[in-house]
Length: 275
Image (cartoon, rainbow, N blue to C red; front, top):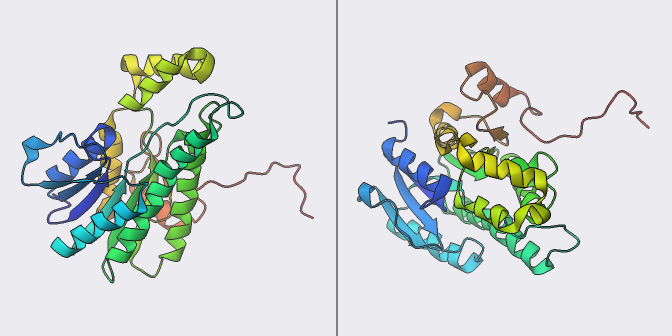
């Protein structure tokens, strides 16, 4: 029960990976404030261990209203998990609608910024944790999914910047890549088809959805670790839930002490010359 008595906000916490995270927090003794623009309540079996708030994270006014409500009633929020997000438009960047690109960035990136800013203003002088969700679209090329990839790489840089800006505010902030988890978000790829989504990723999506995907429990376990006191001092990192050895003590110490580990940096080859 490593989150005993701790209150944590989870955006998108009523479905997909967010739902798994919400359940895990409750099982570890925490209380969850679920923030979602989708009002489906999928946690009824955990009645008494969570509160549901309908809120669109891309709307700054709604986020402020949500946070003020929590502050007035509870005033003791320990953690924030930004899990809400969408794929956005699929197709070549030169063809997809610019409005759809902006809407994706508004939900994924600006939604995370809105929540972080409001959360930071909510608390003072207490140890707190923020966990943001990035993804594979941030660590390598993701053709035909530019809106998603742009928003996710932005979250990585946001996380790193905030970790430095908030270094004296007793806040640890990290972001994670959950791996390919079988959620409803991938239906958009199947609907788009191989021509629009790209044959390679379309086939990979079909294969993953047929039983080779990553369990959402792996991402949830990493979130719990990053919310726990065991992760104190780890901040500004981009961690892969299925691929990084984050459970190993040696790796955890490297995360604390190596400023370049688990970050996105330019790698230059032997032909690079300093000018």
